[in-house]
Length: 544
Image 1 (cartoon, rainbow, N blue to C red):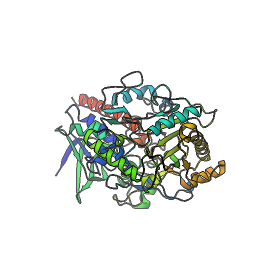
Image 2: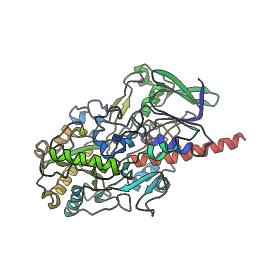
Image 3: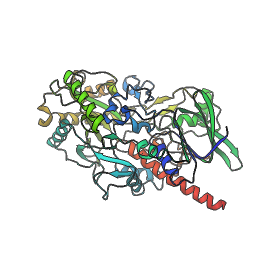
Image 4: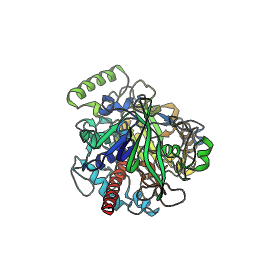
């Protein structure tokens, strides 16, 4: 069957959902979305507290691994990504953060006109419906619902108070005039449910006749054709139910498979570093050496404290189980209660030293003992505090493992390759401990677990970080935007020297924003959809 659409979108993750919703909005364009995962119609996705099971729910999670990391004493890291409608916005902790204005001014300064803070802020606002109301920093009327936590845990409030006691400013809005300080996060939730990119942009529009969404459709390659004008993307080959299919794109193919899988799909299609492609048995079609380079991520050091009597935290115990049963009933019947938590309810943005001009550290305070990304069942009660460096300098790669498109790629974040990343992490751990030692939290009698508690000097902390740290799930940069020899897309997100092909997801970030990456990814897709539609209008006018 020779199916033809105006646009074929690869991936129904955060960016792909935005593209699908916006490009099909006016009814003029036929849009097909290909998603390898399945439906999001499960309480694990819709109930916010369901995220506690996401690390074990491999039907919703790609659950990838890194190659052994020299900076982590040879350990392999965990790389979870959403494999479901909504992508990682359906499995993440729902924290809504944009980063710092200087992040985007930096993008523009790297040769990307139109991507400075003044340029991207309107797209953040267009996407947002903030329940606090509209002001200079927030939008209302957008598809993405942003809310305060419905029922913050008292421990999260204690963390904020402890931060203030430690001398840090209280911050009631990390997306306002200043990011610095300690406070509660806002979340992408609505009426007690997760409000993923799929809920915001895709599933409300199932009835659109010009929109087709195909789940269980794993992309094999982008179809490339040599035309008089040059190399052009004309379709996508995918497998569904064991059967190969090809859909064709009249206008554009939009690649939104994320920072780990978008470069893989480009390389499987023959676009990438030619020597590497030949090594794994892929015939190069377009030598683009930057594909798969510039991978970077937020590395996370995790302090865990045990507090057996702290039953207001989430934990495995008789009392904890009773609370979970009660919470499940309340959420099922009223969409309220304990299970509206995102666990990482509170946090902080801090400067690692007085000489730093803006926050370079982020803390996530979790109202549970979290070990090994939640893959390890931990008995009892307590809390956790995550520490990450916001703008790491270490850079890694994504490479093909083989020419088999069903084989996951080789992921090498190259964590802690730059010593400065390690030293800032060490200072962040020391600052987090300073907060945890304040009276507001110390009164609970929590004890840091021995594995980290024995690391007290900077050298000991550094070694503990190498032994235990891992991602906090923000990979970016592998199809970098720019105009240099190692850049993959231009400032319109068009793949260099390939017609009809754009990459739209976190892989295009030149550098990582200072915070969680979901909101910036949605912003990029909002801006990209406008670019695509503007190009369509211009070419239609030209054709007329």
